[in-house]
Image (cartoon, rainbow, N blue to C red; front, top):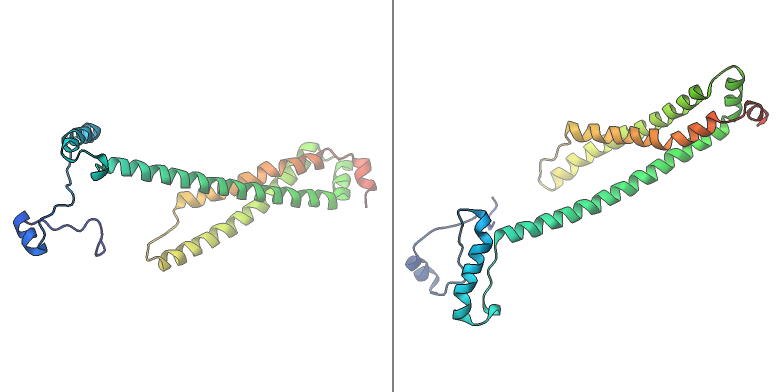
Length: 205
């Protein structure tokens, strides 16, 4: 609704417009259709009417707002795919980071795992322990990311003069994805810890 926007219109008689502008040349016409499904048909009718007058298609153009809307939607879809790809790469990098952290943890705690197994701990128990640790690690990272995202959303929104507030649904989805990344990429280190031979694990230093 700012000044000079495309929604600013003034309707007045044609003769008055000619007197005010001192120009009787009409640059364009705007038509509306009752049914948007008939847009292509109307375009063809206008083309059949104008071509015999101008004899050259380069001297006039017929544009439908639906075509502009389709172009805009395709651009938005392309941008969404691009952002989705970047987000997917970020999640992959985060998952690999969680997996490396858990592999280091398993290596450093090999003797502890051997002691627990020698005392009767089952594979399932060891695996659950490390999977839960991976989920907690990624959850903490997700919470920090949500807090940072909420703060930046308000700051960037104020800078752009917009009211941008994170929704509860987006926060829950972000937290769920972070937990899922921990569970998915923590499974392999957990399985490695569960398969350790207790004797070999006790011998490690």
